[in-house]
Length: 142
Image 1 (cartoon, rainbow, N blue to C red):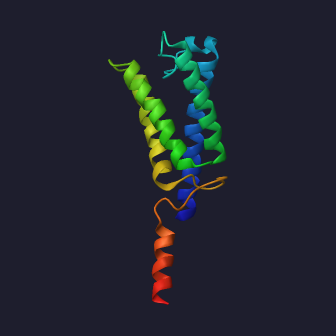
Image 2 (tube, rainbow, N blue to C red):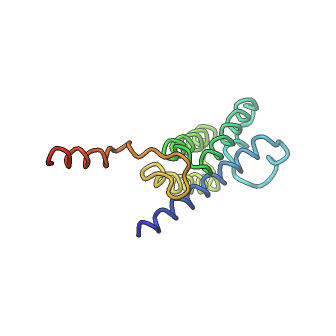
Image 3 (cartoon, rainbow, N blue to C red):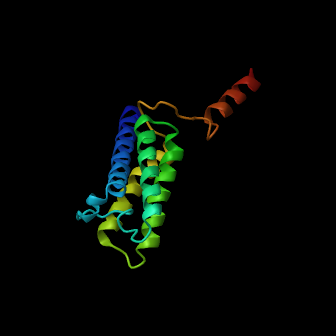
C-alpha cells in the first residue's frame, strides 16, 4: 500500500507541475493568451508586469516540483499562487477556472500533507518529528 501512495504522490507532483508549466507558458508567450484555455495569468488584464513575474515564478516552481525539492512547501506556494489571483481577478467566477482551481487543490493537498513520494531530490521528513519522537522514547527506555 505504501508503494501505491508513493506513486500517487509522484503522479500528483507531475500533474501539478504540468499545470504550472501551462500557466507559465501562457503568461510568458503573449500569443497563447488567445487560446480557449482557462488561465489565472491570462485573466490578469492590465497587469502585464505582474502576470509576467507570476508566470516566471510558476516556471521555477514547476521545475522544483518535478525535481522534488521541498515538495510540501512548493506545493503550498503553488496552490496559494494559483488560487488567490484567480479569486481576486475573477470576482464573478468562471466555471472553467473553478474546475482548474479544484484540480490544483486535489493535486496539492496530498503533497502538502505527505510530501513528494518517489524520486524526490530533497525532502524534509522532520516537519512532524515522527521519527525523532520514536527515537527519543526508545533511547529513554533503554
